[in-house]
Each structure stands twice: as structure tokens, then as C-alpha cells.
Length: 74
Image 1: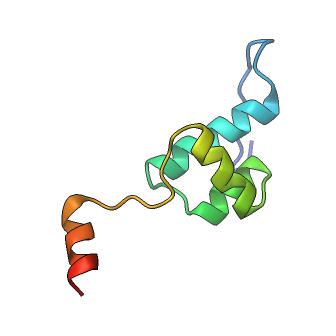
Image 2 (image 1 turned 45 degrees about the vertical axis):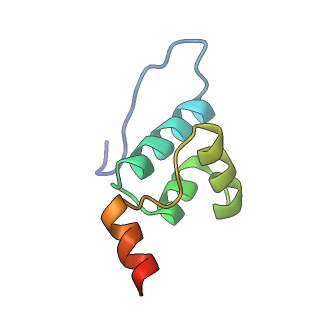
């Protein structure tokens, strides 16, 4: 396997597309990849991936309380 390629034996009830989508959602959620890269991994356009994130209740923007205060105080 080359760098960047992972092989995993999935249970029969988890499709490759579902696994790829879940991986992309989690990588985005923990800020390991950008929105664009996550969408690419999952095989979606950015707008479609934003919808997927909504389905899994993952915010597109992750602002903490201090970030929000700073944003609104400007």
C-alpha cells in the first residue's frame, strides 16, 4: 500500500461508500482535513457534503464561546 491508502475489511452491512463518508465526516469533525478535502474523500461536492455534515449533526463552523465573542465585538 502506498502512503495515503488504507485497506480495511468492512462488515457486509457497511458499504465502501458509507465507510468513506463516515471517515470524511470524522476527519473533518476533528479538524484533520478541510471541508474541501473531506468532501473529496467522501466523493461529494462541498454543498452536498455540508448536507451530509448536517445529517450527522457536525457543525460546518466550529466556533468556541471566545471566538464568537471576538467575532461579534468587531
